[in-house]
Image (cartoon, rainbow, N blue to C red; front, side, top):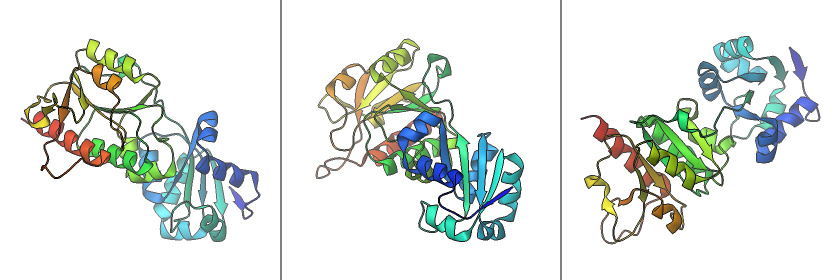
Length: 266
């Protein structure tokens, strides 16, 4: 174990770069976790922890967490409480940081179950919304989440925090061609529905989602482009009161995920 106290130390500078740069995470295949609970969830799910950093306050407050992460991590570093406060991304850093190896998130047809329930997200912008969607997918038993490549970075601190550990229990796939991905799902017998405010959309309450199904959610402001809607099996809408214009993307996703979950309970 090494003891670090300077923000100029190469290990600390690497940690900060990976916290703040999507490009750095992509190029290195590494990401950073901050906090005791999420670090333990990552370790318990088999995520490879290459480096573990903890402060004296972190060790005092979370002795069992520090003991376990010390056993499973490749390299161990103790950092000062002042340094933990400085590099922490959260408001009140707990003094627990893990540098982890990214997961296999590439979408391939062999990862899809014919009777599975999936959510596809196209062009989302808000990392907080993505974190909430991951959390809802986990809560309502989705078999996977499929993201277009222009969605927020899966490994950003805000997404990871918002997912409340769901990220490590839910298969999340990235696709560079959502249209082709929809085609693969449909060829595999999984109907794909666009969540769209269009006149010919069916109510989600009248849409049978009990078998294998995938529903696609679009951008917070503009929804799904017409070309995405056209490549789906059909479109659906969530019934609302006349004065309501639309729902937040994460809320709409959660309602649809609940309907899939409820249908599968019969």
